[in-house]
Amino acid sequence: MTFVTVLIAFVSILLMVAVLIQNPKGGGIDATFGGAQANQLFGAAKSADFIEKATIVLAAIVFVLCIVAAVLAGGSGAAGGEQLLSQ
View (cartoon, rainbow, N blue to C red):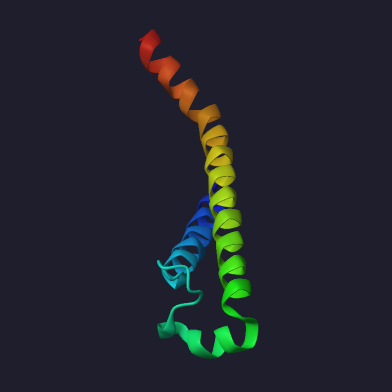
């Protein structure tokens, strides 16, 4: 359970970075992170596509990991709840 929690935190940080790198106008990587050089090297469309796909994949990973964590925690949490109700 601890491993899943740490993995959720790590992927969430990567997701935040991916969201912050995106340019809200769809122009590619933000200039703060060296966007001018990246856009010249990869082209604006390719870098924007990569960042968008990375954001979608990271969001899906966080979603799945949260479900896994809920299932793992549900086994021990449900038993505790049943014990409280039976007392």
